[in-house]
Image 1 (tube, rainbow, N blue to C red):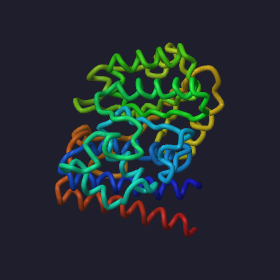
Image 2 (cartoon, rainbow, N blue to C red):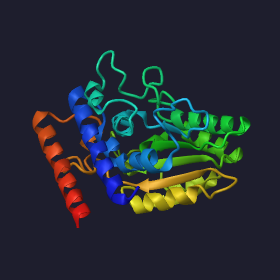
Image 3 (cartoon, rainbow, N blue to C red):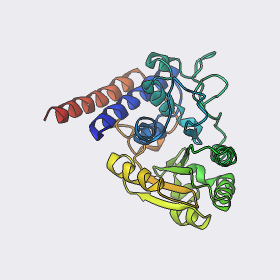
Length: 282
């Protein structure tokens, strides 16, 4: 799939995020928007997954370790065909399949229920080791937030992955530099992120713009060539990307737009659609 098509899908993912959190009147748009391009690349270019073969034993696995960014995951899954896009309006509603954090109990296609930060990467390590023991060739991907790196369990998992040489495990860090309490450098600075993952035995790929598909493509292609150690992709992103008043604004980590803000956000994303259509017509 070419970059233009990926950009169009990513913008639809962003629309799905805004629709979901607005309908729920709660949720986490900022980090979902920053990760929209990563999720798009994973589901539409990188991973061997098929909503018609959800239990295929050879499918790739994805674990959203930063489970609060479920609105982004749900939007990507809906566009991929796991469930109707219209169902995004049920986000966080009582009895809905789209809970505030991913639940494998309710939604087919979710590989692991996540939400307590640090646990997702640990589950991904277990899946990767299980694949090796079972003689399977699937790859395992897990997406973490940079604020999540403050959890000690993340580094226990990284140590395990390095010690067990889990070269079919790909750890992705959505490095948008903001968490709920402010800039990560002021709350509990995890830098240097790359050197820490290297110290735990990972092959590290730094991506200067994790919202750019050329750079994401290069990183994931490199990751597949790595043998004998897990890969950690550190992707620098923009929190709230695509929505003018949410970009790089810590206050939009975990709240929903009101009706007026929803209209502005959707207009911003409509303009991006128009620009992409013009680009495709040239």
